[in-house]
Amino acid sequence: MRRPQAAALFLLTVSNLAARAAPAPRPTTHGQLVALFEEWRAFQRPTLRGGIPDYSAAAMATQQKALPTIRRKLEAFDRSGWSPHDQIDWYLLRAEMAGLDFDHRVLRPWANDPAFYRTVFEEQSDQPAREGPWTVGAVELWKLRFPLDAAASAELAGALHTIPDRLEQARKNLVGRGRDLWIGGAHEMRAQAAELVALAKKIPEGSALAAEVQRARQATEAFAQWIDQQLPSKTAPSGIGVAHYDWYLKHVQLVPWTWRDEVALMERELARAWAFLALEERRNSGPQPQPIDSADEWQRRSTAAVAEYVAYLKAHDILTVQDWMEPALLARVGHFSPGPLEFFSEIDRRDPEVMRTHGYHWFDLGRMERDPNPDPIRRGPLLYNIFNTRTEGHATGWEEMMLQAGMFDARPRSRELIYVALAERAARALGELRMQANQVDLEGAAKIASTGTPRDWLKLTGKLVRGEQHLYLRQPGYGTSYVVGKIEIERLMEARRRKEGDRFSLRGFMDAFDAAGLVPASLLRWELTGELPDDVKTMLAD
Image 1 (cartoon, rainbow, N blue to C red):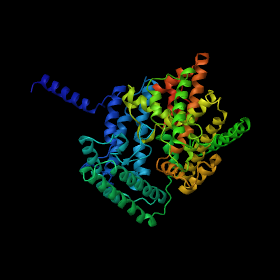
Image 2 (image 1 turned 90 degrees about the vertical axis):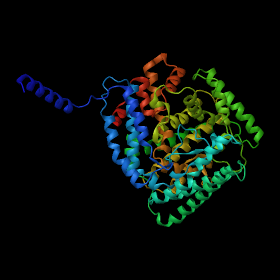
Image 3 (image 1 turned 135 degrees about the horizontal axis):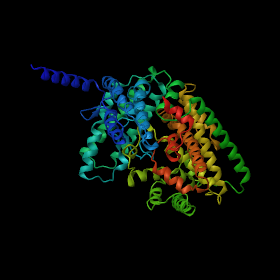
Image 4 (image 1 turned 45 degrees about the horizontal axis):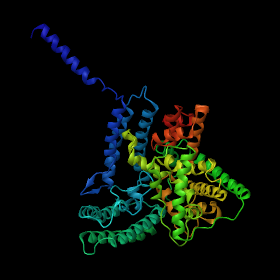
């Protein structure tokens, strides 16, 4: 070989080796982040085998082993010069990935939580995604319109057909020993069986769908009985402990506080609610309103309450009111039901307008449907209920904000109901915190919530108090999110008001707040003011 050719070949070889050794360029754009988001969401879903999501120990071990690879892809991003909006999106992905990591290391709902395998739901959740961890493939009966046409009937039959096999797999997967999770799981399965009984009455007897409903009901009832049979061996506590709770708040829920901080905050809000209630009771005159006791009166006053609420928002320029909002609230006022009152019906039956403020949830869901966020990462619900400090926190805070905005001045006794409701949220949050720390069991948490609620309206004889605590046991941070999010949003409003000074308008604030999407409340301050508070900066540092 001639010397020049040999030299050229040598240089080409060196160049190829250098190219192979050179690291791939780091991703730098939000568009690349969106592509990773789509890859991540596909990765997060369990593998389907025969149309059934596979939560077996082997399948979960395979997913857990592969998780670090996709997390490294996220960490590889160069975010230099990114806007707060784009930076927040990156942290949202990191939080979701931390949520799956925590599921594998700690919660393991597929192995510890029998309620995880419930799939049939008759009522729509008011959240972007149903509260708590659930298996993939929910059957949302509220979406159906009866009588069903042939296509809808076949689709429902196909979904119900999988239930016996799902529950058979669950018997193999469930190895946890947390007693309260098993007790709550049996309750959830009996609720599913009852909904299938109600469904059977809506469809033609002798049809293929009727056979699938019966088969699913029988499998569900048998599974509930199996859970009961396992209970004697389930003697362990169900809480995750303080250290895990702190990690989950910081890395998944993006809450810049610890378990100990939250105990102090909930005790403070509980005391404030009781104190302000006492002051309102001293200030106000006239008899206490009595619960509405007829369906006609309930319908009349509920309809009037929605109209009055929306009119107040418009007249006082509180937010941009769109034409669909009033019908959306009217569709969600519920139905009059005689019998013992649970906590929220105690409030609703005295003044239906109070809980319409908490119904901001239906505004959130309406925007998701009618005006989807242009950002694909924020368009749908975040995983692991990461949205809850924004959705539940704002809806809770909005109740008192509307009180302070004057909406209940003409009905001062209704002002008292706001503080009764706030006390209930703080009391049940303390129940969650003590329960997750394994200082009390679910029954003890229910007692904390009940005794902390004024007027004996959250009764231990009712269904709500234990149902709420079971959810908060299954989904750490959910019970506290109502008050934690409220406080964070108050901090956000303060920062925006300070920054804008006399230019601040409530309508401008609320429109920007809604446009930002359903992201954790702690991050909204960064997006809406450009400021990153020290506690949030510390939270995001790891």
